Length: 472
Image (tube, rainbow, N blue to C red; front, side, top):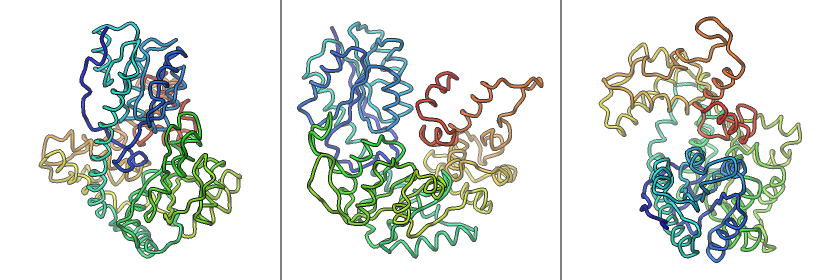
C-alpha cells in the first residue's frame, strides 16, 4: 500500500473576483466523486466533525456540473468510475475551477497511475481503504495552501486597484460623461446599477466607485450571481447556521454580514434566481435579514451595487425579474458603452495594457506599429475591453522585438482566423464544424464557462458536453 507519496506542491492559482474573499479562510468546500455509495459515505464521515463542507456525487456529469458553481476548494476523484476515468476528468475540472486541489483515490494503486495523476494536475494520491486521520490531515494541509492563495489574491487585488485609474480615462465624450456621473454619485447612499455588455469594465468601475465613496476603506466584495446554485447563492448572501442543510457543519457568515460598512457588488444581477429576489428586496428596504436556518433577525449597513449585461427591463416585462426589486436597485443607472462605440479609446487602452504587461514580463517594448494600430481600431471587439486586454497580453508574450506588429495580434483581429462558411477548397462546412468554430471563438473572448454559455444561449452542462464532443 502507498498513499500521500508526493508532497503537495504549494503554488498560487488564479482566482476570479467572485471567489476572492478575505484570506482568513476557516473551512473548505469539498467535492467527492465516487460511484460507490460506501466510499462517499466514508468520506463524509471522515470530515463530519470538522468545519469543512462535503458534497458527494456518483457520476462524472453530476460532479462536473456542480463544479460550475466555482465554490469548491478540494475534490476527491475515484480513478475508476462507471463510464469514465478520474484521471481524464482532472484537466477539465481544473479548467473550470483553476484553484481546485484534486486528490485521486483508487483501490488499484500503482506508481504509474500516481505519477500520471500528478502530471495532469492532481496534488496528491490516496489509496483505498483510507483512514479518517489520513483524510483529515490531507484536508488540513490543503486548507493552509488555500489560505496562502487567498492572501496572495488580496495582494493582487491591491495591485490591480493601483493600476485601475489608467482604465478610467477616456477620450470619448460619452465615456467621459459616464466617469463624471460615477464620481458624482459614488459618495451617495443610492443603489447604483451598471449596465453594459460583457467585458466593458463594469466591475472595474464598481470598485472605483467604492473607493470614491464615503467609506473607501470598508470591505469590497463581489458575488457573481450566475456562478452559484440558488442554495449556495442564498448562503453566500445571508449566511447559514450549523445544521441548516446537509453538510452545514459550521455556521457561515454571508457577504452581507462580512462587508458591513463597505460595498457588496452583485454582478449579473439579471440572472439572480426568482426564489432569492424577495429576500434581497426585503434586505434593501429594511436592512434586515436572517441566516439560512435561523429565526434571528440581523442587520447590516452594507451598500449594494449591481451590474448586468442583460436587457433588464425585458426581464422585468417577462416576469423573470421583480419590478419592485429592479426599481430599488436602479435608483441611478449608469450605462457603459461598448468599446466599438468609442474607437478613440482603443489604441490608448491597448498602449496602457502593453506597458503594464511588458513590465510584468520584463519585455523592452516600445509600442505598436502603425499597421497594428490600424487593425486594433478597425476590429469591432465583441469582447470589449476584456478581449482587448487578452489580445495585448498574448502579443506581449509572443513579441521578440521592440514593437508589436499585425502578425502578433489574434487571427480574429487580423482577419486570419475568422470562422468562414466554406473550406479553402470551396466546399461548404458541415454544421458540426461551424458549431465547433463558433464555440471556440466565444470561449476565447470570455472569462468563464458561465459567460460563454450565456452568450451561446445554452446551459453550462450542455456547453461542457459540446466541448467534450469537439475536443475543445
